[in-house]
Amino acid sequence: MTAKKPDPEDKKPEPAAAPAPVPVPAAAAPAPAPAAKAAPPKYVPPTPVLNRGNGRLIEDRFTTWPTQVFADRWSRPGYQWGAGMLAGILLGFAVTSALIGELAGWGDKLYSLLGAQGLPPLAVEAIWVAIKVILVMHVILINGLWSIWWERKISAHIQTRVGPTYAGSPKGWNFHGWAQTAIDGIKLFLKEDVTPAAADKWVHALAPAIVVVPCIIAFAPVLFGDGLAAASLDIGTLYIFAFAGISVIGIVMAGWGSGNKYSLLGGLRGAAQMVSYELPRGFSVVPVLMFAGSLDLQVIANAQAGYWQGIIPRWFIFYPVVGQLAFTIFLIASVAETNRTPFDIPEAESELVSGFHTEYSGMKWSIFFLAEYAYVLLGSFLLATFFLGGGASPINAVPFTLVPSWLWMLGKAMLMMFVFLWIRWTLPRFRVDQLMDYCWKFLLPWSFVNIAFAGLYLAFWLK
Amino acid sequence: MMSAYAVVYAFVIVAVGFAAVTLGLAKVLRPSLPYARKESTYECGIPAVGSTEVKLNIRFHLYALLFVLFDVEVLYVYPWAVTSRELGTLALVEMAIFISILLLGLAFAWRKGALSWE
Image (cartoon, rainbow over all chains, first blue to last red; front, side, top):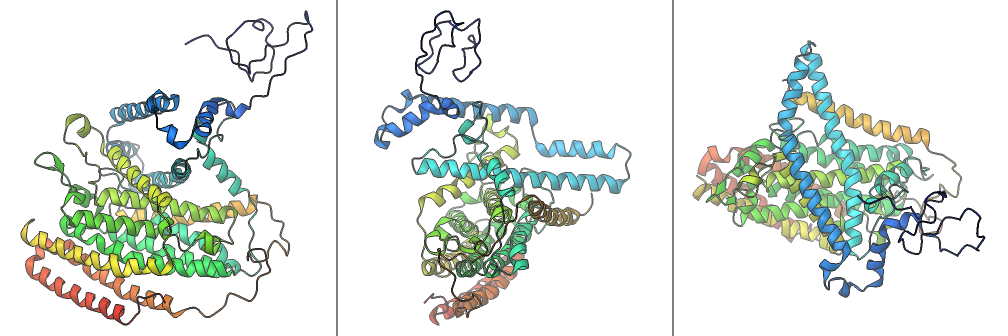
């Protein structure tokens, strides 16, 4: 570490170190000398405080054309920093996984520790259930903070912008605007909530709750790693689809209760779309259930253990034709279920202002978005469990198979979440009739064909 | 271990509590200064005309009806899919017949124009 340079923004004059000739660029105004020479102070243009760490970034972004950005990229400081950060993140994950190991093992230790406290068994169970529920609740809430920030950054970079940059600490620890969502959340929490006079007050107020409550309940059997689920239900898949389906009612309530024509149209379109895309979503998983022979997410993940020829993982996505078709249909239907952009007909900004949440503001509005991003996370974890082998390592070699399962699961889910965000910011919106045709006349027949393929596999290959 | 469904009940309680606490606390904390202009329905800057209690297009109901039919089929297919390995080839053929009847229904709805938006 070098000696601490005087901070350009530090306005306090330090008498001892004032005249030291430190090679700091023009912004470093020499602190006023102790009145020996009363020279007129040179004009120093004010340096924006929040911009300090990012001046180079902005200069790079906005003074070069996108075509020049890709010339000689590794000499650019941004890329060197990025590579360093990526290496740091990977190293951090390696150290974390080595230190923590399997999370389910820690859960078992915690449970036996609870049992050794001399509490009555019912109290132990109650505490244990409470711990599990609170942990999953934290996953949902932190996902709200994380994925909205990530979506804003990804959308910005896809559109050659930089996205949130300043939110964080005024003292400079504003790493890519990490605190943007938290600050937005506080703002939304304290914002006035306007209920239109034409609205049905109770329906309008209850709609966000009806959307978010089933969403949270649906997280109960979600698998976060080997043996790492709040509730190991033997009907897990059906349970998740059943509860996720209830949220449609909240969207219809929001559309109908707002007393606004845009909201009404958005709510109805949302109902038609979400209800329609539930069918290919449900049918596309049938081959997975046939191969795994269970609705329990843990059993489905375990059925994908092992490697063909010791190399190719036996994940369902790698089953020829059937796996890829089921994965694609499930991914498309999951994007459509969350009302995100190629399928965002219920909120289409250019025709319906904001669709079913036009008349919402403040906390009610943000509850809708918490639910949307929780559904994105749910879809990502389901894709990782059904098709990407759950917590299994993709490479059958030592450093990779030693990584704990929850980390693989998280990595796969985040990859899938990235695909969700990528699709949203890349593809243009469908028209309403195209949207419904695509579901009923394309995805649904193909998901039936896929079940037939899977039946042939069962009859001839996977005896 | 207690039944796994105890966790589900806990989830129900926590989910309802979360919605109630966030919405209720925000109601206590936020300012509320309503007046007639602010409470008017948004319609691109002009006063809203008419009410929203209008007749809806029949196509929404058609899709809802078809959904109910096919969603029940999902419930029939899932138990078969789970046990399809034990049940063997006969059940496979039976399911093929069942799904082809289902596809006939889809083709009928398609032909009758229930799947076209116009």
